Length: 334
Image (cartoon, rainbow, N blue to C red; front, side, top):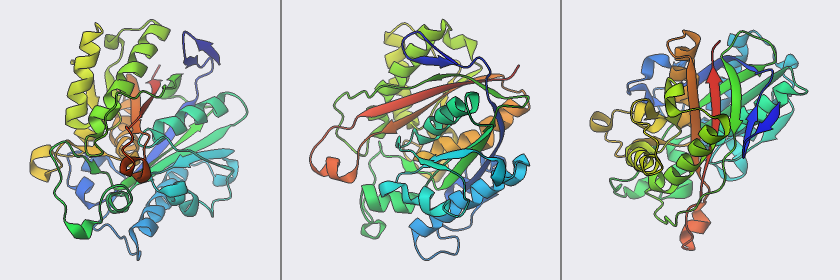
């Protein structure tokens, strides 16, 4: 493992993503990627009394699923990285408290899944044989915390995005035949002064562009090197902003660029406005659809850049701007 360029980590012995698992809610089950998820739910509560308890159950069952699929028992997992959107990351800590695996709780807002994979890969190249990474979000719990109680029936502006209900998880290992995490480019905090909590795509797009440009300069690669460049949850509006920012910097990414928030819902038939968001947006799209494309070698080189808005309900009420963050991982098959 070594640092190259400005802020990129190159893995000399790239860790393998052994397996992934994903569970999604009912709206996601009606979307275009439904067949790629391990399990889809019929309702938002899944037998629990609160949305928060339901989210904890979703991440717990997703992690149990990936452990079962991988064939690696929990006793052989050296540590896990997990996080979510709720205060103090209670979905992850409550949902995973019975596993008995050393736990690192992480928060990068909607970039948490790739942040977890990045930290997990660093551990897998150093001391750990197996590392578990997971994240979750829930439409109802997130709306209650960050915006308005659902009972109010507030109208959603066209720029708003729909928080994905679900969880994604992955197990990384020193050993295996890929796909491999070959590079990590941690992002910097970028703030362009956006204050509208219902326009997350615009707030996060500049950080996506900054991390992508840095990754390309550090590695000496061009956008065309990758079969796909996928952002976390910029949605339709943020995606277009990102394309324009990159174009103004001399990079054309239109041919191989897409966004998890665009992929997970059908904008017209599902009325999701600008698309999907939330920690589980990137987590489920990768753990379901993208990982299967890599395993089948329909896709051999993927640059996954998860984006996050580093704000909370208090900062919005105090009129603060919304800082953005974006972390990138290069995933390749050899």
